[in-house]
Amino acid sequence: MSWYVLLVAGLFEVAWAVGLEYSDGLSKPVPTAATVVALIVSMLLLAKAVEDLPVGTAYAVWTGIGAVGTATLGIVLFDEPADLARIAFIGVIVVGIAGLHLASGGH
Image (cartoon, rainbow, N blue to C red; front, top):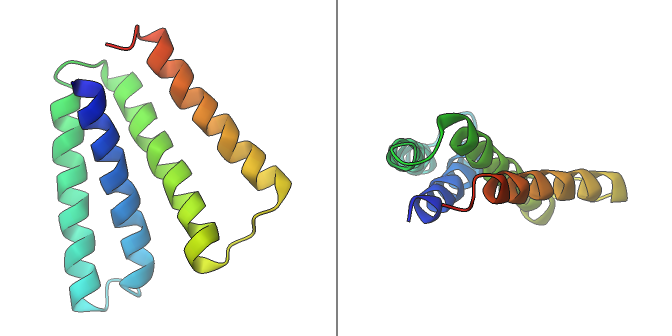
């Protein structure tokens, strides 16, 4: 169950990171509020996940989910570059996340 909590925490990390772009430097009230809520939810869920998972593993996976999701949405939503090297390195992060999950026994 902790892995699912960690996955959702990572998705909320993506939400707050993308929210930073929409908040225009935290100057727009509604996107700023949504960003702050997503940040708080993400941290609370990460804290819940580390009750059962090693903190180093959980943190690395959480940031990995955030990095992959944010980079992908940057390409899709904000016209950021989608060259082969960038996509390949995003893939490397995905492999790292999967490797950490497998190395921990998936529990």
